[in-house]
Length: 269
Image 1 (tube, helix red, strand yellow):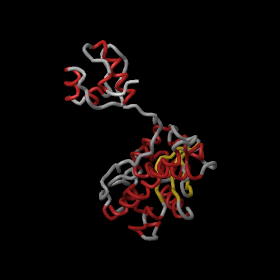
Image 2: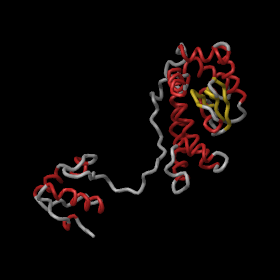
Image 3: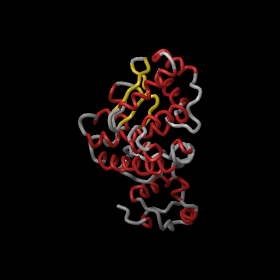
């Protein structure tokens, strides 16, 4: 077993490169490339950085950091807009706590609970559907990561406004009119007792309003989510106090991302 980079065979020609790289990868060695003038030069050029993801001459071997962790890791995504993009409709303080604290906590807890479990290595969607009703801790945290990711994309600065034609046609088919859709969506959000979500979904080829408690989402009810509004109090209490109806009204009039909803509809159709 090679103990030091000095014990690796000198790299005096390209044919030795795969053998050298193999020893390098096994040991994770990063320093003291003084076995030959050629390697000294590569060290000065930051050997690992230059050849990361580059195929080596005369070999299929790729120099990459050795790791036993190939599974998915939950991450806190960046907001797809600036935290002050919505003005008083949704304040930067709300995003500071909602995204920076609440969403981050779900990410951190989810990673701890998934690590080393039967769910490790699965996609978020697979974890959600396979843990529902079986492992509340994993389900609640991973589903909330998914739900919040979806919610941020359901928001758009200067949102609301005109609905894309294909989406508007589907809405009228399902609800009769855009106004009737807005009323149904608002009532779904208002009547969701306690914490939860209200969704516009596609199920069995038709649009529906779906309300879900706590961390539940349409994936566990055989539906495809198109757009959502978070009705947990931390989503609106800073800006609206306990006036959930006013928050839902603002969401539909000036924040809903119809382009995101239309893209989801197109992908599911």
